[in-house]
Image 1 (cartoon, rainbow, N blue to C red):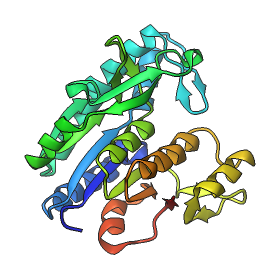
Image 2: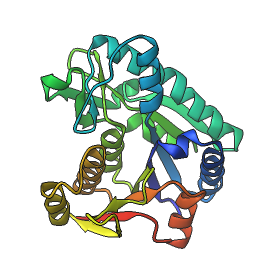
Image 3: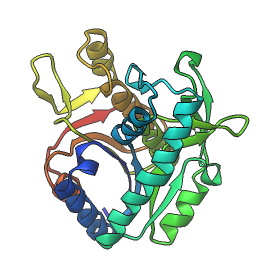
Image 4: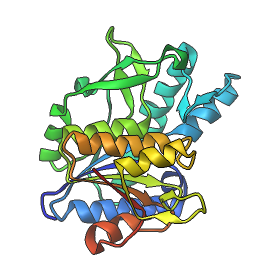
Length: 260
């Protein structure tokens, strides 16, 4: 476990509920002290939606992705890179984790292109330059990454946080890629937890309409991370305190493991 690199997608209740937030930040500080390197990619969907509502801009989604015009993109960057990123860094620092907040635009970390014009300024990651992340890890910092990328002509592109985290996990050949979720993991048609999934099983469940909406980018990002060289991918139940520590140190069966 020593010197393991762990990329985490942090969002949902784990980020919004004070007691879960405190438990996560405390665990992160303790685990970082055990020679484990953590990279945290955060979401911010509810905060973005709240600002858009105040600005009278409609929120629309297709297959779990936010349709992003220029006005929406300005709000996304303001919320993710400003408000949410700095709040997460402050929360981690308050519990003893050395955190440094960046976005995917810093150091050309994430480069992306628009693949589906119907979604507007939503990017698909084409290249990752992990040099800045590696510098921060070597300095014993926890990089906290806002999922905004540079487009071909330098404009900001909105990246689904699950997707951004998976791309980083692959580029770093991380030992673990962990998506912290508001649900127990991937559920079957009867609502029971599926503890392990292969690519073929994921495709079957998508075709049957069992895996839908926001779970689609989660399972896809797990598969992409594994394809790119990440060792293990997990959709973790983040609704109970210290699920991250219990999984990493005790191998507790919390969530759905995705295997190649």
